[in-house]
Image: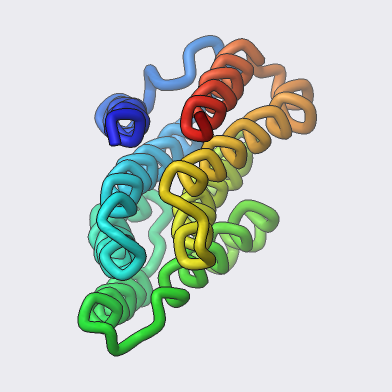
Length: 225
């Protein structure tokens, strides 16, 4: 439990920093334009969402699923003003938030399978991670997004997917520590993939992502002890 709380606290702190001060969240990056800063704020919101999902996972699968969907709904509503920068329509976002909240309520009452929670996170997150430019078109973004912005949008999908990995691990019978380890293994791999595939073409510093990968690997090892 202590490791889960510590991990959640770390995610919440980094997410809060990204939310409150996105302009200072990526020191050393070139061409850190407004579009990238806006998306970093959305990334931070879902890091805080992930932190709450990790804590909920200590209370069992049903609670984790229901709380996870509620958290997603609240986070979606929280980032509606963020996406205003790109003139993204509000109606679909509010509709998805209501759907997630309804599913969360059904999960908590035992009237819907807990599988809905990881499915919702993974379907959304994986699609955004692998198709950031198509996602921007789907969002009807009216303002240009830089290459760094698209990279941050992909990261946004990755963070959403991490909640899905955690909830899927719990639902399919892994222990809570094993599920926590799965989350941080995923985060380490995403960080290393970004270093290899993205950092060079963006002329971005690699130290931060490598440090985050190392911290994630350490947390995964500690979770399995």
